[in-house]
Image (cartoon, rainbow, N blue to C red; front, side):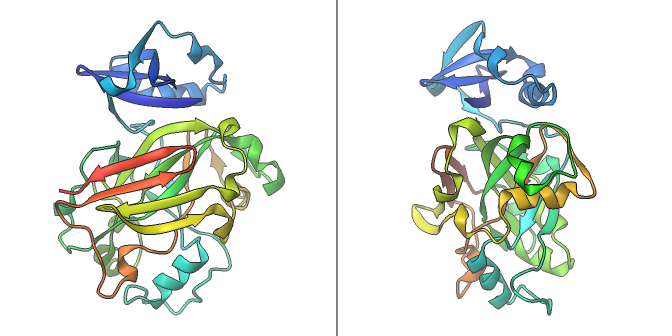
Length: 287
């Protein structure tokens, strides 16, 4: 199933997308939290198929499927082999660490950075003029998870969505950590929907890509991850608890702007699209 949050005639709506029609499950201010709360209640999506009305998809403006996450987005850095080499070779990596990490590199993005499809990425907020894109697959956690072994991790996955981990590279570099450079308002486009795990078999063979103004910049499959999704869940839950509705961004492939000579940073007027087989497209203009 495909769960969405959207706006229709000024009213927030949450529901299930079926054949280009939205089965409405929640309306009004409460709909902002409806998808998150449904996951937190751990009752599954079946009750959502009995909505009271339907609205055509082309009549709404999509928002992030979870517009207001309970907690920061958990992110994994340098998790594709070629991108790790790309970053290590750039002028932005000032560390003396090996290009391929021995354990997952974890950081977070602030919840206030989340925006939906077609909402503008506000490049003007980056005073360093180094806005970069990072197309990523996100995992949405289904139930409370603590000390989960990799072989059991699939039981804790509710579904998947997309994220553009937009980054101010020079702010990231200047502060010797990644949180500030990745948490600017509007720097976490998310969507277009959460697709439940049962609809996405064979994840390792599915392709993720990013285009800027129609130019293909990134293209890879999950088989290229250094640390696969079960390993990430095991790593995070070894010492902490993940909660229903938590979001894990799994890393970005080679081809980000900093990897070009000179770097191809985003600027006002650009348009970025992240795509994934079975989830769809997440597109955002840059202003």
